[in-house]
Image (tube, rainbow, N blue to C red):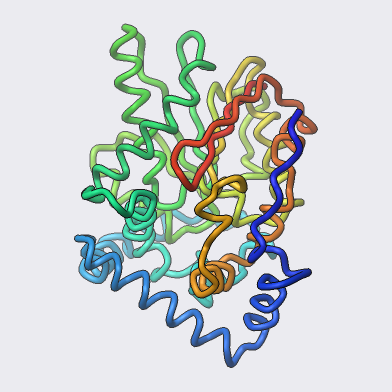
Length: 319
C-alpha cells in the first residue's frame, strides 16, 4: 500500500499560501468579490472557447422550471453540509443559476484539462469519459442490470455512462442495463430531465447519496464522479458505506475526482488556487483523506487507481 500523496500546499490551511487563502475567504466583504471574479473568469473563458454559457443558461432554466415539482421528493432531508456556498453560488447547488450553468461548467472543466490542444467541448468530454469508462471496464463481468450514478448533477456523467453501457451491451448481445441518476438538488434533476431528451436514463431520483433508499445488494455498478471533493470526510465515508450496502457482491464502484498527485494541481498559481479554494468549501478535507484506505475500510477490494488525465484520477474497485 502506497502512502497518500501530500495535499497541494494551497489546500492546506495550516501553513503558507493555504493559511493566507483560508483567512481571506473567511472575510465576507472579501469573499463576495472573489466569488464574482471567479464567475466572471469562468464565463469569459468558456464563451471564448465556444461554450454559449449565458444563452444555454437561459434555455435550460426556462425548459426545466416546469419540471421542478416532479423532480422534488418532499421527504428528502437536505444535509447541513450541502447548503454551503459551492462554485461561487451563495445558495450552493440549490438554485437555478447553479443548475442551469452546470452543463457549461462541466464542458469548461473538460477543456481546461488539455489547454494546449484544439478540442471542441464535445471532443474534450468524450476523451474524459472514454478514459473513465476504460478504467472500470476490466472489473465488469457478466451482464449488468442496475446501474447507479450518485451525485449525478445535471446528468452529464450519467448520460455518458448510459450510452457507453448501451453500446457495450449491444456488442455483447445483452440487454442494456437500467441506469438511475441520484442527486440532492431538485433544480439539477429538473435540468437533467431536459437534457435527457431520449430517455436514456431510466430514473432521475431526488435523494442523498448516503441514504439512497435502495434495497441491499440491488445494484451492479455505481459511479461517483466529481462528487467527493464537495463532501466533508464524514459524508464521504457515509457515501462509501451506502455504496457498499447497495452493491451486489462482486459489483463494481468507479470513483473519479481530483488527483492529489497531479503536478498541475500541485503547482497551481496562487491567484488560481485562491479562486478554486474560495469556491470549494471541502477541498482541504478531500485532499487530506486517504481515499484508498477509506474504500478498504468500507469493505471494497481489488482497487485499481489510475490517472485518467493530467488533473483527475479514477479509482475502480469491487464490493
